[in-house]
Length: 329
Ligand SMILES: Cc1cc2nc3c(=O)[nH]c(=O)nc-3n(C[C@H](O)[C@H](O)[C@H](O)COP(=O)(O)O)c2cc1C
Image (cartoon, rainbow, N blue to C red; front, side, top):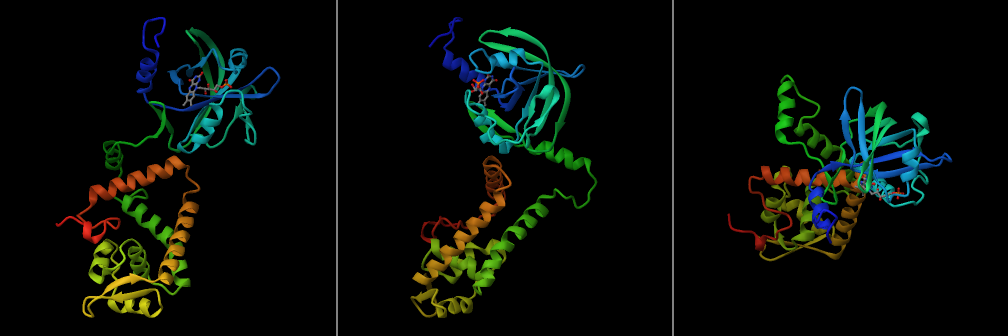
């Protein structure tokens, strides 16, 4: 499909999409006082003094008349956890504000919560912009917080990751003290608080950390030897012993097969049932812990941890690769 200028419209849109942006929701009130809002990534800063910003609104938008006539509007720079809100305000005409708590900003413009920043504007200028109307606003008031922003890239939501250089520059600026944002501290404390809740479940079943690690490994690698098991979770500093595994066998959770001096450990039905129950409990604890972050932030966290594991791996065996398929060192 071509445009009046002869461009292929899809290719033009795709080229523009390679410009990575944040995502905003712009709100106002219509003539009758009803709240109006639209998701927009055409937002940009214009001037610091006087403080001014702009965005562009499709002439086909249902909200065109409301924004064209508005004396005030508010730009909400969305945080990473507001993807669902962005989708809600990108649907034309629906009751976008249903169930949302809003405050009244300048000129009555509805203010949404949970954003990375909010800019309350007086409508200053409007310009022709082809099939869009360009709106320039003078910023009367703003607030912001440290929430990570929602990002839009080539038609999809994304998350922003700071480059290592910037982080270390910030670190260099601070004196050599035990910082609150030290990665070792953050990882250790997060693990301690997260695993503490799982351990409470283990205590209720009279299981140690090593029992839990052995059982959850055997679910994936049934028939492993003691050495094979310990190799898999050696990184944790926890080791299973033959005595503990024999205890689990006495409890009917495992059974031993093979040579007496080199037994292989197999799950019994009761062992599998208990382990799957513990894994389901761990999943629920995880879901609960991640509830405070949105799905994007949770995905960003997993991504960063996987990256960190890969980049610091001294060559540990992978729990998800069975013994038999591991490459020889
Ligand atoms: C990430 C994203 C960015 C968008 N940016 C704009 C924009 O800058 N301007 C615009 O007019 N529409 C934009 N849209 C589309 C509008 O949000 C969408 O057409 C909305 O349904 C219009 O609402 P209305 O018809 O109720 O006014 C965007 C949509 C998404 C998902």
